[in-house]
Length: 325
Image (cartoon, rainbow, N blue to C red):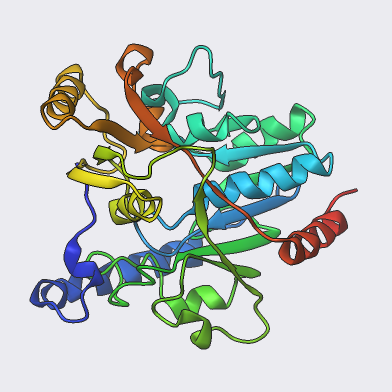
């Protein structure tokens, strides 16, 4: 099970230095793959929302925010994902009634609450399946580093709190590709949260940069309440910070690996812990889709949302209108 290494976000680390040879090897393999991979252009436009770091940056809530804007403008939109941590082996349209996170992945279950989701390890096949169903445009959740698909609009999401870490490639650091190389192909950059790393100053003036913030999506009253907060996401610190910013008091933090599939015993232990501390259990919306209905009882699910702002929304819609027939 994978959790984000702490040394990725430290300026100096012996562990990171010792892993640099593997980072160079990773870079070489990716470079060779990109040279010999032929890109396919789908029959409908593709918006790719992704990040350059391993771990959460806010791309899924950003994808949802973009989809909501498109739906408001009567665009028939769907999501494309490879169904990470799911077990599907062929093109699948997510059915919230019959599918579980273990089948199609937690992100797919979350996205399917907003718009249709098509899953395939071969994302081109998923896009064409969507097109055959009358979808006009797809949002590819993740995949900026995927060289097989032509992307009409490329949006890079960066977590403002963590930035790009120690600026090393995997496994010495969190980067899937260098920041400089990503800037050569990006149309828009979204910084989620305060720009603590001053990344905006390193971005060329010709690339629009949008600052957004993540907020609790519904009227949850967390102020002055005690919580056992648990999560299995890439950057759990953001979840904890959101609770505390809303006035909640976290008695204990329980961190599980990213995309962790909770067991009956896990939930039983957490509920016992909450009772013993006279606290409430709280988790993320992404974690909640990995729980069975009976497990969710007495657990607060904290949904979050990102507001893109009117200026960026107008720019994006104009860009998209040019792509549609």
